[in-house]
Amino acid sequence: MAKAKVAFFDFTCCEGCQIEMTNFGDAAFLELLNHVEIVEFREVMSEKTKEPIDIALVEGSFTREADRKRLEEIRNRAKIVIAYGACAATGGVNALKNHMTDYKEDVYGKDAGMPHLDSQKALPISAAIKVDYCVYGCPMDKYELLRILSHLLHDKEPVIPNYPVCVECKRNGTICRYQEGDHCIGQVARAGCGAPCPADGIPCEACRGFVDKPNEKALKKVLIEKAKFSEKRAESKSRIFSANLRSDAQ
Image 1: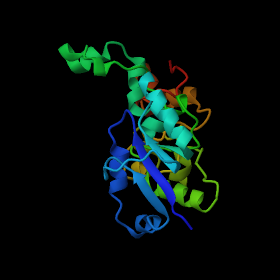
Image 2 (image 1 turned 180 degrees about the vertical axis):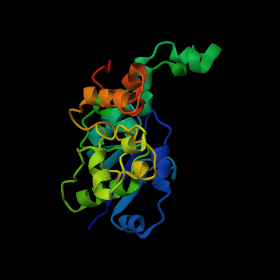
Image 3 (image 1 turned 90 degrees about the vertical axis):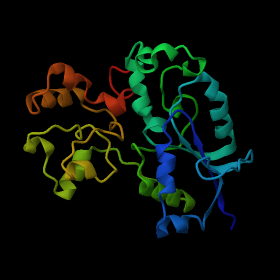
Image 4 (image 1 turned 30 degrees about the horizontal axis):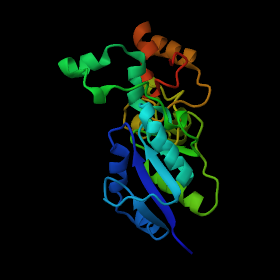
């Protein structure tokens, strides 16, 4: 049986999810290589292909209309497109600029007018092409990606979690950050990571985005009443990874 052809592509991102993939060295990843042929992966190989692809993995957000054509070409060549990492799946940290003005001047100063800095809103790649599956997180969980690829190779429908991180904390017996006098936004954050941050005493920042239909009003209320946040801080707290998912997304 022929191996599935898999290719990795990147758009506006730090390429951290690609780097995360290169950190594999365990038996699970080596076994995957027995079933797939990686035909393009800029971080680890110079070869490129224009041939049809079984699975295209796309990292990075859609921030330039000029990138639409390349995305459409990938979509036309691929049987399955997976957006992996927060930037590709939701717009990620890049989408913070959608809520800002003069951000180029703040970051680049006198060089803000350079042509290559001209870009539009940071959007998930689903704003340009049809996406079949998303692997959330910043960076994405490489074992979750392995699991999804394994399911696809075995003609099984991957299960993408759509319940809050609080569920995983309960399962793990993790003490709620609010009981420790801390804050957390796990009540609206999409689970699937295993909730390692709260277990290590670190509040969840929703790097996997929101669950569908998050109760943002309740989140704001608990941040004000329990974590003693100011109204302004409570209002903006969940924006870092979910700027495109909030009700005030523009």
